Length: 326
Ligand code: XMP
Image (spheres, rainbow, N blue to C red):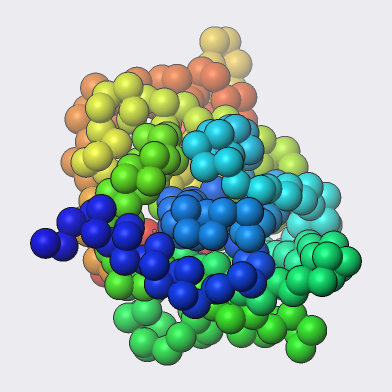
């Protein structure tokens, strides 16, 4: 039978066969896919794997801690964290075009990851070993959307390692290539990953950088992070995590709206809630959130986040809208 346990056993055996005694590197994004892929490889080859987590400063509240504490706690994986916040902010200064943002974030990510890989390569070389393999959390829908090729030409630009330089050529380990998201989640649970990681909403590689409409700045990130944390808290408290595929919160940083609070006029920014229901993100419907939940979110966000004075709801399906705004 095609059980979750048999998927794990089969993949563990395949990974061992592919990797042998070679060393393996994996970029953790904080997302479900890379976490489950890494956990599978860890199960298969243990300390031959090193995970690299690039903190690009575009993460949601608590995500770095989740990787460093929960993921490492559950798997015992070797983890290297690179703090690259300033570098990403500097590279994004003045940039408003969505495609440019994606390119810059993808490029910087690759550079930081390359450096981490080189450092690891140097360290491994001292022990006479080579880092030969790279783990990727590519899922079946990614394979389909990118035309079925191996690894490269992925829409997810931060995962696109087709452009790595010659001294960093890796064999790709992609243990999730045949799986859909719900199967990946079951595999994660089977491997002992906590609910906080496994039930996590999909989150794009470019992170909050493509959820700020306008230039990305440290202050705007702080505002969006605060609003996003409240939205997630309320959706979880309402027991809606399983019903919702994901709920991007978008900061319209280049739009201002007039409001009133206490005796004073405010001139802040709107946020957009983008709750969607979906099977695989290729198509999506907007989620009919209960009014009481919307009300709580609206009240809390406008009270607790100084720069936000308006909460709006996106009621567009995909197609024609994409899930993300950029
Ligand atoms: P769209 O906006 O294309 O998003 O409807 C579909 C799904 O993909 C996620 N997404 C990304 N994931 N890197 C990623 O890893 C990216 O650059 C990226 N862009 C979009 C999005 O959150 C949704 O789940």
